[in-house]
Length: 371
Image 1 (cartoon, rainbow, N blue to C red):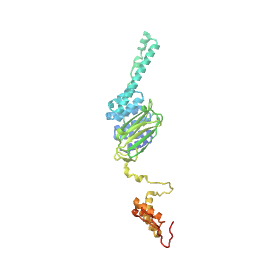
Image 2 (image 1 turned 30 degrees about the horizontal axis):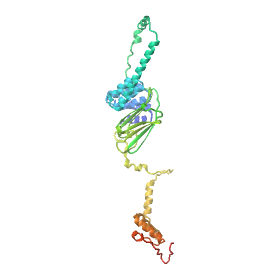
Image 3 (image 1 turned 135 degrees about the vertical axis):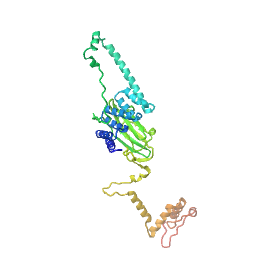
Image 4 (image 1 turned 30 degrees about the vertical axis):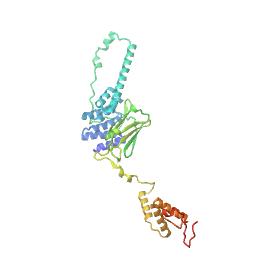
Protein backbone atom coordinates (compact mmCIF):
# COMPACT_ATOMS: atom_id res chain seq x y z
CA UNK A 1 0.00 0.00 0.00
CA UNK A 2 1.47 3.29 -1.08
CA UNK A 3 1.84 6.47 0.88
CA UNK A 4 -0.97 8.26 -0.98
CA UNK A 5 -3.39 5.43 -0.28
CA UNK A 6 -2.43 5.24 3.39
CA UNK A 7 -2.98 8.98 3.79
CA UNK A 8 -6.24 8.88 1.85
CA UNK A 9 -7.65 6.07 4.02
CA UNK A 10 -6.67 7.89 7.21
CA UNK A 11 -8.22 11.15 5.97
CA UNK A 12 -11.41 9.35 4.97
CA UNK A 13 -11.77 7.81 8.44
CA UNK A 14 -11.26 11.30 9.92
CA UNK A 15 -14.03 12.56 7.58
CA UNK A 16 -11.64 14.90 5.77
CA UNK A 17 -13.22 13.97 2.46
CA UNK A 18 -11.85 16.77 0.27
CA UNK A 19 -8.26 15.99 1.28
CA UNK A 20 -8.89 12.24 0.96
CA UNK A 21 -10.25 12.82 -2.56
CA UNK A 22 -6.99 14.51 -3.59
CA UNK A 23 -4.88 11.67 -2.17
CA UNK A 24 -6.95 8.98 -3.92
CA UNK A 25 -6.54 10.88 -7.19
CA UNK A 26 -2.77 11.08 -6.66
CA UNK A 27 -2.73 7.33 -5.99
CA UNK A 28 -4.51 6.67 -9.28
CA UNK A 29 -2.21 9.02 -11.17
CA UNK A 30 0.91 7.48 -9.62
CA UNK A 31 0.11 3.77 -9.81
CA UNK A 32 -2.54 3.55 -12.50
CA UNK A 33 -6.21 2.62 -12.44
CA UNK A 34 -7.37 0.27 -9.72
CA UNK A 35 -11.00 -0.74 -9.16
CA UNK A 36 -10.79 -0.68 -5.36
CA UNK A 37 -9.17 2.77 -5.29
CA UNK A 38 -11.76 4.09 -7.74
CA UNK A 39 -14.51 2.88 -5.41
CA UNK A 40 -12.85 4.59 -2.47
CA UNK A 41 -12.73 7.82 -4.46
CA UNK A 42 -16.35 7.26 -5.45
CA UNK A 43 -17.20 7.14 -1.76
CA UNK A 44 -15.47 10.52 -1.32
CA UNK A 45 -17.45 12.04 -4.17
CA UNK A 46 -20.60 10.63 -2.62
CA UNK A 47 -19.76 12.10 0.77
CA UNK A 48 -19.19 15.47 -0.88
CA UNK A 49 -22.49 15.31 -2.78
CA UNK A 50 -20.97 14.88 -6.24
CA UNK A 51 -23.32 12.18 -7.54
CA UNK A 52 -22.20 12.36 -11.17
CA UNK A 53 -18.54 11.64 -10.47
CA UNK A 54 -19.38 9.07 -7.80
CA UNK A 55 -21.31 7.07 -10.42
CA UNK A 56 -18.59 7.70 -13.01
CA UNK A 57 -15.95 6.12 -10.77
CA UNK A 58 -18.23 3.10 -10.28
CA UNK A 59 -18.49 2.77 -14.07
CA UNK A 60 -14.72 2.97 -14.42
CA UNK A 61 -14.27 0.31 -11.73
CA UNK A 62 -16.73 -1.98 -13.54
CA UNK A 63 -14.90 -1.36 -16.81
CA UNK A 64 -11.77 -2.73 -15.15
CA UNK A 65 -13.59 -5.60 -13.42
CA UNK A 66 -17.17 -6.36 -14.57
CA UNK A 67 -17.55 -8.90 -11.73
CA UNK A 68 -16.89 -6.34 -8.99
CA UNK A 69 -20.00 -6.70 -6.81
CA UNK A 70 -19.21 -3.74 -4.60
CA UNK A 71 -19.00 -1.45 -7.62
CA UNK A 72 -22.38 -2.64 -8.91
CA UNK A 73 -23.93 -2.28 -5.47
CA UNK A 74 -22.65 1.25 -4.98
CA UNK A 75 -23.68 2.32 -8.46
CA UNK A 76 -27.16 0.88 -7.99
CA UNK A 77 -27.62 2.52 -4.60
CA UNK A 78 -26.53 5.89 -5.97
CA UNK A 79 -28.89 5.64 -8.94
CA UNK A 80 -31.76 4.46 -6.74
CA UNK A 81 -31.23 7.43 -4.41
CA UNK A 82 -31.45 9.69 -7.47
CA UNK A 83 -34.77 8.01 -8.41
CA UNK A 84 -33.25 6.62 -11.59
CA UNK A 85 -34.87 3.27 -10.94
CA UNK A 86 -34.46 1.58 -14.32
CA UNK A 87 -30.73 2.36 -14.39
CA UNK A 88 -30.42 1.20 -10.78
CA UNK A 89 -32.15 -2.07 -11.64
CA UNK A 90 -29.71 -2.62 -14.51
CA UNK A 91 -26.80 -2.14 -12.08
CA UNK A 92 -28.21 -4.67 -9.58
CA UNK A 93 -29.38 -7.24 -12.14
CA UNK A 94 -26.03 -8.99 -12.94
CA UNK A 95 -25.84 -10.27 -9.35
CA UNK A 96 -29.54 -10.96 -8.74
CA UNK A 97 -28.70 -14.41 -7.36
CA UNK A 98 -27.25 -12.64 -4.31
CA UNK A 99 -30.05 -12.00 -1.74
CA UNK A 100 -28.96 -8.39 -1.20
CA UNK A 101 -29.05 -7.62 -4.92
CA UNK A 102 -32.34 -9.49 -5.35
CA UNK A 103 -33.91 -7.30 -2.66
CA UNK A 104 -32.74 -4.17 -4.49
CA UNK A 105 -34.13 -5.44 -7.81
CA UNK A 106 -37.53 -5.98 -6.16
CA UNK A 107 -37.44 -2.44 -4.75
CA UNK A 108 -36.57 -1.05 -8.18
CA UNK A 109 -39.41 -3.00 -9.82
CA UNK A 110 -41.87 -1.67 -7.24
CA UNK A 111 -40.72 1.93 -7.77
CA UNK A 112 -40.81 1.56 -11.56
CA UNK A 113 -44.37 0.23 -11.40
CA UNK A 114 -45.44 3.06 -9.08
CA UNK A 115 -43.87 5.65 -11.39
CA UNK A 116 -45.62 4.18 -14.44
CA UNK A 117 -48.97 4.10 -12.66
CA UNK A 118 -48.52 7.69 -11.53
CA UNK A 119 -47.55 8.83 -15.05
CA UNK A 120 -50.65 7.18 -16.58
CA UNK A 121 -52.84 8.83 -13.97
CA UNK A 122 -51.36 12.25 -14.73
CA UNK A 123 -51.75 11.73 -18.50
CA UNK A 124 -55.42 10.81 -18.14
CA UNK A 125 -56.07 13.85 -15.96
CA UNK A 126 -54.39 16.22 -18.42
CA UNK A 127 -56.21 14.76 -21.41
CA UNK A 128 -59.54 15.44 -19.75
CA UNK A 129 -58.71 18.98 -18.64
CA UNK A 130 -56.97 20.40 -21.73
CA UNK A 131 -58.76 21.31 -25.02
CA UNK A 132 -57.71 19.61 -28.25
CA UNK A 133 -55.23 21.73 -30.27
CA UNK A 134 -56.38 23.26 -33.58
CA UNK A 135 -54.72 22.09 -36.83
CA UNK A 136 -53.08 25.49 -37.26
CA UNK A 137 -51.57 25.34 -33.83
CA UNK A 138 -50.35 21.82 -34.45
CA UNK A 139 -48.75 22.92 -37.74
CA UNK A 140 -47.05 25.94 -36.22
CA UNK A 141 -45.70 23.90 -33.34
CA UNK A 142 -43.99 21.48 -35.68
CA UNK A 143 -42.66 23.91 -38.26
CA UNK A 144 -40.67 27.13 -38.39
CA UNK A 145 -37.09 28.22 -38.74
CA UNK A 146 -36.13 27.10 -35.23
CA UNK A 147 -37.95 23.76 -35.13
CA UNK A 148 -34.87 21.67 -35.85
CA UNK A 149 -32.91 23.42 -33.14
CA UNK A 150 -35.72 23.07 -30.62
CA UNK A 151 -36.25 19.36 -31.16
CA UNK A 152 -32.61 18.41 -31.51
CA UNK A 153 -31.14 16.10 -28.91
CA UNK A 154 -28.15 17.54 -27.14
CA UNK A 155 -24.95 15.60 -27.68
CA UNK A 156 -23.85 13.57 -24.66
CA UNK A 157 -21.26 15.13 -22.44
CA UNK A 158 -18.11 13.02 -22.52
CA UNK A 159 -17.28 11.46 -19.20
CA UNK A 160 -14.26 12.83 -17.44
CA UNK A 161 -11.03 10.91 -17.36
CA UNK A 162 -10.88 8.52 -14.41
CA UNK A 163 -7.49 9.98 -13.52
CA UNK A 164 -8.91 13.49 -13.24
CA UNK A 165 -10.46 14.95 -10.12
CA UNK A 166 -13.67 16.97 -10.17
CA UNK A 167 -14.32 19.75 -7.72
CA UNK A 168 -16.62 18.83 -4.82
CA UNK A 169 -20.09 20.35 -4.93
CA UNK A 170 -21.37 20.18 -1.37
CA UNK A 171 -21.08 18.32 1.89
CA UNK A 172 -24.08 16.16 2.80
CA UNK A 173 -25.31 15.04 6.20
CA UNK A 174 -23.02 12.57 7.88
CA UNK A 175 -23.02 10.32 10.91
CA UNK A 176 -20.36 9.27 13.37
CA UNK A 177 -19.49 5.67 14.14
CA UNK A 178 -17.72 3.81 16.93
CA UNK A 179 -16.68 0.22 17.51
CA UNK A 180 -15.80 -2.33 20.17
CA UNK A 181 -14.95 -6.02 20.16
CA UNK A 182 -14.96 -9.35 21.95
CA UNK A 183 -12.91 -12.42 21.13
CA UNK A 184 -15.57 -13.58 18.65
CA UNK A 185 -17.07 -10.44 17.08
CA UNK A 186 -16.61 -6.77 16.26
CA UNK A 187 -19.55 -4.41 16.74
CA UNK A 188 -19.73 -1.18 14.73
CA UNK A 189 -22.35 1.37 15.80
CA UNK A 190 -23.48 4.16 13.47
CA UNK A 191 -25.23 6.90 15.45
CA UNK A 192 -28.26 7.70 13.28
CA UNK A 193 -31.76 8.39 14.59
CA UNK A 194 -35.14 7.70 13.08
CA UNK A 195 -34.10 5.42 10.22
CA UNK A 196 -36.25 2.73 8.67
CA UNK A 197 -34.82 -0.62 7.68
CA UNK A 198 -35.47 -0.01 3.99
CA UNK A 199 -33.24 3.08 4.10
CA UNK A 200 -30.19 0.99 4.98
CA UNK A 201 -28.37 -1.31 2.58
CA UNK A 202 -25.18 -3.24 3.20
CA UNK A 203 -22.66 -5.66 1.78
CA UNK A 204 -20.16 -7.84 3.64
CA UNK A 205 -17.06 -9.46 2.18
CA UNK A 206 -14.38 -11.44 3.99
CA UNK A 207 -12.23 -8.31 4.52
CA UNK A 208 -14.58 -5.34 4.10
CA UNK A 209 -18.06 -3.97 4.55
CA UNK A 210 -20.16 -1.24 2.96
CA UNK A 211 -23.25 0.36 4.51
CA UNK A 212 -25.36 2.96 2.72
CA UNK A 213 -28.11 5.10 4.26
CA UNK A 214 -30.56 6.67 1.82
CA UNK A 215 -31.43 10.07 3.35
CA UNK A 216 -33.20 11.80 0.45
CA UNK A 217 -33.57 11.26 -3.26
CA UNK A 218 -30.17 12.85 -3.93
CA UNK A 219 -28.38 12.25 -0.65
CA UNK A 220 -26.92 8.87 0.34
CA UNK A 221 -24.44 8.42 3.19
CA UNK A 222 -21.98 5.53 2.95
CA UNK A 223 -19.49 3.92 5.29
CA UNK A 224 -17.09 1.70 3.37
CA UNK A 225 -14.07 0.16 5.13
CA UNK A 226 -11.40 -2.45 4.48
CA UNK A 227 -11.23 -4.30 7.78
CA UNK A 228 -8.30 -5.04 10.04
CA UNK A 229 -8.83 -8.79 9.80
CA UNK A 230 -11.03 -11.43 8.19
CA UNK A 231 -14.73 -11.80 9.05
CA UNK A 232 -17.41 -14.39 8.20
CA UNK A 233 -19.90 -12.51 5.95
CA UNK A 234 -22.73 -15.04 6.23
CA UNK A 235 -22.63 -14.85 10.05
CA UNK A 236 -22.48 -11.03 10.19
CA UNK A 237 -25.64 -8.96 10.68
CA UNK A 238 -27.03 -5.42 10.50
CA UNK A 239 -29.71 -4.15 12.88
CA UNK A 240 -31.53 -0.84 12.39
CA UNK A 241 -32.71 0.66 15.68
CA UNK A 242 -34.43 3.88 16.70
CA UNK A 243 -31.16 5.65 17.53
CA UNK A 244 -28.47 3.67 15.74
CA UNK A 245 -27.49 1.17 13.08
CA UNK A 246 -25.51 -1.72 14.56
CA UNK A 247 -23.24 -4.02 12.58
CA UNK A 248 -22.09 -7.24 14.22
CA UNK A 249 -19.09 -8.62 12.33
CA UNK A 250 -18.29 -12.26 13.11
CA UNK A 251 -14.54 -12.76 13.45
CA UNK A 252 -12.94 -15.53 11.43
CA UNK A 253 -10.36 -16.08 14.17
CA UNK A 254 -10.20 -15.12 17.88
CA UNK A 255 -7.65 -12.31 17.68
CA UNK A 256 -7.66 -8.80 19.09
CA UNK A 257 -8.02 -6.09 16.46
CA UNK A 258 -5.69 -3.16 17.12
CA UNK A 259 -7.76 -0.98 14.77
CA UNK A 260 -11.04 -1.26 12.88
CA UNK A 261 -9.63 -0.51 9.45
CA UNK A 262 -6.74 -2.23 7.72
CA UNK A 263 -3.68 0.02 7.72
CA UNK A 264 -1.10 -2.23 6.09
CA UNK A 265 -1.72 -4.55 3.15
CA UNK A 266 1.03 -6.99 4.09
CA UNK A 267 0.20 -7.57 7.76
CA UNK A 268 -3.06 -7.18 9.63
CA UNK A 269 -3.03 -5.16 12.85
CA UNK A 270 -3.99 -7.91 15.28
CA UNK A 271 -2.70 -9.58 18.42
CA UNK A 272 -3.42 -13.04 19.78
CA UNK A 273 -6.33 -12.57 22.18
CA UNK A 274 -4.85 -14.90 24.80
CA UNK A 275 -1.61 -12.88 24.84
CA UNK A 276 -3.23 -9.50 25.49
CA UNK A 277 -3.69 -9.80 29.27
CA UNK A 278 -0.70 -7.51 29.79
CA UNK A 279 -2.53 -4.81 27.86
CA UNK A 280 -5.26 -4.67 30.53
CA UNK A 281 -3.32 -4.62 33.78
CA UNK A 282 -4.71 -2.76 36.77
CA UNK A 283 -3.98 0.94 36.60
CA UNK A 284 -4.80 3.62 39.14
CA UNK A 285 -4.83 7.42 38.80
CA UNK A 286 -1.45 8.90 39.63
CA UNK A 287 0.49 12.07 38.87
CA UNK A 288 3.73 10.11 38.81
CA UNK A 289 5.44 9.73 35.45
CA UNK A 290 6.71 6.30 36.50
CA UNK A 291 4.13 3.58 35.91
CA UNK A 292 3.77 0.83 38.50
CA UNK A 293 2.84 -2.77 37.81
CA UNK A 294 0.34 -3.32 40.63
CA UNK A 295 -0.18 -7.00 39.79
CA UNK A 296 3.54 -7.61 40.18
CA UNK A 297 3.58 -5.72 43.50
CA UNK A 298 0.72 -7.89 44.79
CA UNK A 299 2.68 -10.97 43.82
CA UNK A 300 5.80 -9.69 45.59
CA UNK A 301 3.90 -8.93 48.81
CA UNK A 302 2.30 -12.38 48.80
CA UNK A 303 5.69 -14.01 48.29
CA UNK A 304 7.22 -11.94 51.12
CA UNK A 305 4.43 -13.02 53.47
CA UNK A 306 5.07 -16.61 52.51
CA UNK A 307 8.82 -16.35 53.05
CA UNK A 308 8.62 -14.29 56.23
CA UNK A 309 10.56 -15.87 59.14
CA UNK A 310 8.88 -15.53 62.52
CA UNK A 311 9.83 -16.79 65.95
CA UNK A 312 8.16 -17.84 69.24
CA UNK A 313 4.36 -17.92 69.48
CA UNK A 314 4.03 -16.24 66.09
CA UNK A 315 5.93 -19.09 64.47
CA UNK A 316 3.66 -21.63 66.23
CA UNK A 317 0.53 -19.80 65.11
CA UNK A 318 1.85 -19.65 61.55
CA UNK A 319 2.47 -23.39 61.64
CA UNK A 320 -1.08 -24.04 62.83
CA UNK A 321 -2.51 -21.80 60.09
CA UNK A 322 -0.49 -23.58 57.43
CA UNK A 323 -1.65 -26.98 58.67
CA UNK A 324 -5.28 -25.82 58.81
CA UNK A 325 -5.21 -24.27 55.33
CA UNK A 326 -3.94 -27.49 53.75
CA UNK A 327 -6.03 -29.90 55.82
CA UNK A 328 -9.09 -31.90 54.75
CA UNK A 329 -12.53 -31.47 56.31
CA UNK A 330 -12.11 -34.14 59.03
CA UNK A 331 -8.76 -32.73 60.12
CA UNK A 332 -10.21 -29.24 60.41
CA UNK A 333 -13.16 -30.51 62.44
CA UNK A 334 -10.76 -32.32 64.77
CA UNK A 335 -8.62 -29.20 65.25
CA UNK A 336 -11.64 -26.99 65.96
CA UNK A 337 -13.31 -29.45 68.38
CA UNK A 338 -10.20 -30.28 70.34
CA UNK A 339 -9.15 -26.64 70.67
CA UNK A 340 -12.56 -25.42 71.84
CA UNK A 341 -13.35 -28.28 74.24
CA UNK A 342 -9.89 -28.24 75.81
CA UNK A 343 -9.91 -24.52 76.35
CA UNK A 344 -7.07 -24.00 73.91
CA UNK A 345 -4.72 -26.51 75.52
CA UNK A 346 -5.10 -29.42 73.09
CA UNK A 347 -4.93 -29.36 69.28
CA UNK A 348 -5.65 -32.70 67.62
CA UNK A 349 -5.77 -33.55 63.91
CA UNK A 350 -7.30 -37.03 64.43
CA UNK A 351 -11.06 -36.87 64.00
CA UNK A 352 -11.48 -40.59 64.74
CA UNK A 353 -9.94 -40.00 68.15
CA UNK A 354 -11.71 -36.78 69.20
CA UNK A 355 -14.92 -37.05 67.19
CA UNK A 356 -16.73 -39.37 69.63
CA UNK A 357 -15.55 -37.97 72.95
CA UNK A 358 -15.14 -34.74 74.82
CA UNK A 359 -11.61 -33.47 74.79
CA UNK A 360 -10.46 -32.64 78.30
CA UNK A 361 -8.14 -29.73 78.85
CA UNK A 362 -4.60 -30.40 80.05
CA UNK A 363 -2.96 -27.05 80.69
CA UNK A 364 0.59 -26.93 82.00
CA UNK A 365 0.95 -26.52 85.70
CA UNK A 366 2.00 -22.90 85.29
CA UNK A 367 -1.01 -21.87 83.14
CA UNK A 368 -4.71 -21.86 84.04
CA UNK A 369 -7.27 -23.55 81.82
CA UNK A 370 -9.13 -21.28 79.39
CA UNK A 371 -12.71 -21.91 80.52
